[in-house]
Length: 279
Image (cartoon, rainbow, N blue to C red; front, side, top):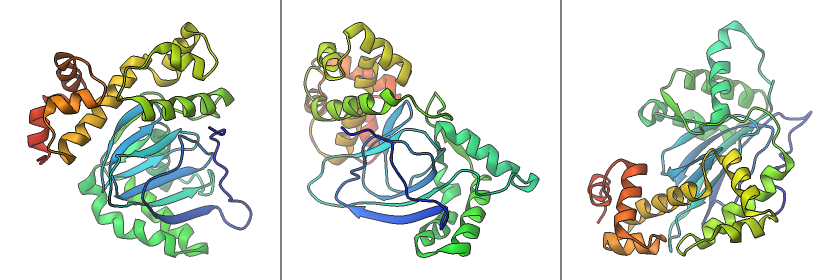
């Protein structure tokens, strides 16, 4: 894993980058950058990592991230379909601190923890969001400002418990990137703390302290949360029995799987499947 500071080419000629993405997967690693970012998920499902938050993502989500907040979207493995998003990234300080924009700047401050907007509130604003990649120059500058002002009046909730307003330590990116990739590849099997510690060249005790400091919870709590998010997608996307899903996501005990599912999702796997239209 290369260092995950993403270099976005913005400078004297332009301060905003707006683009549409359409590929099989969202392939960006766990990364951060000094620009703010607004992302709309048009297609694709999987797990999103925003700061210390881990949770599923669905089409229709609109997420605002302040600069330096680590993030990535990891797809659920599927044979068919595409992952589509519309993304806007812009430099800090391009809009003046005017009293009339106080609500917008308060929203950007809150976005240091990541913001996901209430879908019914954001839906009327999506046409304006989706047209941004087709704009340039003053028109893009003005339309983005208008969109942000309107979004500041929308209901939303924060994602990460920790906020990330400052530059990150250099070790944060490369170590956490390696850990994310390892978990993604190995979550179906038993994982030992020694493996993770060796992966990032640390003792087990040092690794445990590092991970808890960075992610706000012990590694195995994070791992169980990741597995439950994988299981929740499989409950919707497959007709596999609940027990088969639990075992395939790395749980060796069905009572423990049910306990963890209730902890993170607030209900049983069977009720979750019925609620979200699983097979």
